[in-house]
Length: 104
Image (cartoon, rainbow, N blue to C red; front, side):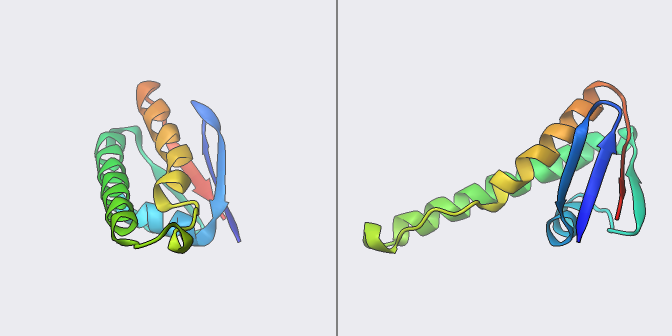
């Protein structure tokens, strides 16, 4: 199932339900049928998401350093790559003092 995040400040961001649930959990929200991230909540949401991205990149770097050979390494879309469109949306909504809404 897909979740669509909408804001008057940005284009829509559409993602799979599992990722949306995880990202919202990181910023202290629950995925319900409908929801809102008020512009007053955006600075804290951005801070939390940025911290999670940094943590993910550090974990990925530690993993890559521990892998013995290139044959064992593989490229995949990590959490930070999937979170960037949502983070960009949060930042632009904050800049324009806009809320973000979502619905299933």
